[in-house]
Length: 118
Picture 1 (cartoon, rainbow, N blue to C red):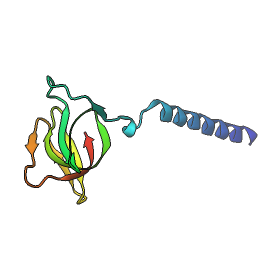
Picture 2 (cartoon, one colour; picture 1 turned 30 degrees about the vertical axis):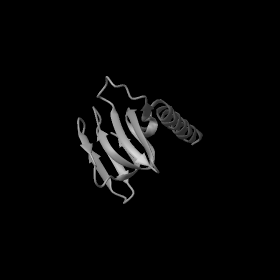
Picture 3 (cartoon, helix red, strand yellow; picture 1 turned 90 degrees about the vertical axis):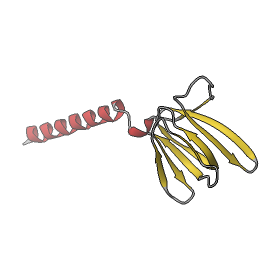
Picture 4 (tube, rainbow, N blue to C red; picture 1 turned 60 degrees about the vertical axis):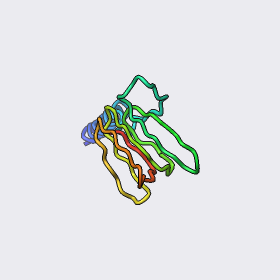
């Protein structure tokens, strides 16, 4: 009887060790991070967003999959480059914009809370 208990404990310890190893070795899906990068005039493959808030204008570029808070800026134009994008606006809507799309919002710009590159 003692051997069965010892074998069961040994099997449980081995299973726990294997699970712990996989947990450390396999990256999680949220390990990827979007990068806010300098806009290079010669590149068109990055996500590029023109926006404004409180009298300030901004042009920002991003690369790599992930999500980032966009702070409720009003978006005037998006050029997705080689990136599929989903942005969440102040109305709670999630809007997908496919790669290689250049879209302008001249009359009713969305107020964007966050962006996610897929």
